[in-house]
Each structure stands twice: as C-alpha cells, then as structure tokens.
Amino acid sequence: MAAADPSRPRLTTSAMIASIAAEGQRTEAAPFGHALVEAARERPEILGMTADLGKYTDLHVFGAAYPDRYYQMGMAEQNLMLAAAGLAHEGFVPFVTTYAVFASRRTYDFISQAIAEEGLNVKICCALPGLTTGYGPSHQATEDVAIFRGMPDLTIVDPCDALDIAQATHAIATHDGPVYMRLLRGKVPMVLDEYDYRFELGRAKLLRDGADVLVVSSGLMTIRALEVAKLLEAEGVAVAVLHSPTIKPLDEATIVREAARAGRAVVVAENHSVIGGLGEAVAGALLRNGVAPPLFRQVALPDAFLDAGALPTLHDRYGISAEAMARSLRGWLQHRRP
Image 1 (tube, rainbow, N blue to C red):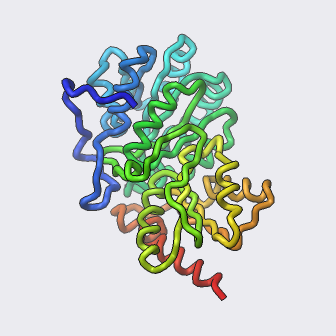
Image 2 (cartoon, helix red, strand yellow):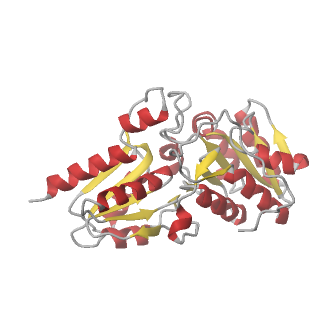
Image 3 (tube, one colour):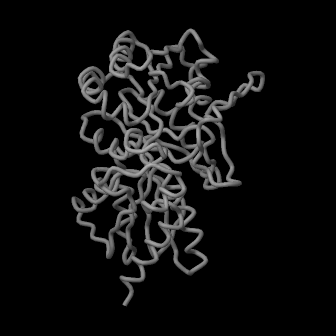
C-alpha cells in the first residue's frame, strides 16, 4: 500500500457518523477515502461518484483531493449506477458509494443489467452494511450479501477493519471487473495489524489457531471473533479465527481444509442475516466437499426486520456483540461435551 503524503492535510470524517469502535480501541479515520486518494495518484482513470452521501461514505476525502474527478449525483441511485456504467465503458474506473440498502434494494436491476452483465470495472462501495446503524430497517442492509451473491460475475468483499479496508481498496482498484464492497465508515477500528495480515482478493486468512472451535468470519464479526477468542482463552477454550473477507468467490479450499480438522466445531460469524450470506456459503462448501464437523452453528442476524436503537444494545440483543457471541459459543460447546 502506498504511503500517505505527509504534505497533505489528513481529513477526518463527520462527527455525525457514529463509530462501531469500543471505548479506547485504536481507530483510523476514513480509511476508504484515504486509500482511494492514494490509489488515484497512480491511476488517473479512477473516479469517485456518490448519491448525496460523500460525507457519510468517506468519499468526501477523495473529493477534496480530486475535485475534478468527483461526481455528486444527488439522490438518484439508479442514475448513479447507469452513469458509472457509461464512464466505465469509456475506460474509467468509477468508485461508486451509497448506503448498502440503496445499492442492494433500489438499484439491483441497474447493477445487473448495466454493470455486471457487461463485466464493467465499477467498484460499488457501500456504508451501513448489516447492523451498523441504529436507524432501523430502512437503513439496515441485513440481506445485501444474500441479494448480491446470486448475481453472476460480481465479486463481493466484506473487510474487517481499517487496515483491511485500505488494502482491499487498493486490491479492487486493480481487479478487472465489478465489485461490491461493504464499508465501515468514520473512525474504524484497527485490529489486523497485530496479526501480520495482508488482504488478498479471494483468499481467507487464518489469524489465530485453536483446537476446540473454528470461527469463520467476515467484516466486523472478525473483530468480534478475535475478542471472543481472547475471552474464552482465559477459560481454557482454544478458538481459531479464519477471516474470509472475500465472500464471492469464496476461498473454499482454505475453509474446507481448516473445517476438516478432526474434532473441531465450526461456527460462522457474520454481520448479516442468517439467510443467504457467508454461513450458507460455508455450509454449502462443506457439504459439497464431504466435510461434516461435529458441530456447525451460525452467529448471524435473525431473518427479521430489526429494531431501531443504540448499536451496543442492538448488537447484544441480536447476538453479535462479543459478550453475546461468547455466551453462544460457551453454550454450544458445553452442549456437545459428554
């Protein structure tokens, strides 16, 4: 990843944007916006486009650095996707931002017909994936991965932290073809630098090993999985964490190899509905390859329209906080012991 230019002021994100970071956790401000600025220095074909959400997807950082390559399209997400398709036809690489609910629900047909079917180099990078806002079902994209997994030739990326987002931004900029990437925004936790991690498109990475249970995770749930692993380590439970930031194409070889370890339970953790996301993708991969772990469970959001409220409360209510996830793992592991 290219180093930041110290002569340029480092923009921060809006104070209106809530962070998912725990109190005292290390964070980086607007990692997507800053990484895109770095990528654009070497690639003049990169453009930034948004539907009235530059500040709330961290694309305003790119807009400040490259105002002549930044397009504010207004609240017209379908037009945004079509305009991006047209520019991609002319050789540009548009990075398009909006909220994940608007991309998946409102513009699906436009992405399918104008971008994916044409194999165009449009990168759709969306904030508020899963349960990362307390605004309720109108803004909670709890089924976006399920919606997009069925779209042919669309790569799907769900990075974990600030490092993952920055490295993934550079990787998808050089990838030939359409990409949907989920974004954490604002002050994003920095975790993976402690694990000698480097993002590779299409690859899952084992962050820590453990003999009792393998957690396969993506997005912010990898942060939770690592927190849970430390909590349970003190109780004598060894938790392995396999981070799968690319959901499509899934790194089946690595997942199958790790899940096949004798006697180890498998849990898939995702900030997404229990229907149609990483959990079902992993389950399908194991079934196709004849792997049957002694226990298979999912930590995921329920198949429901979720409540509005404060994120810590909602995360605990729906089972994706570190404490709630630890309770679930304890119960499952206790139940399987003789």
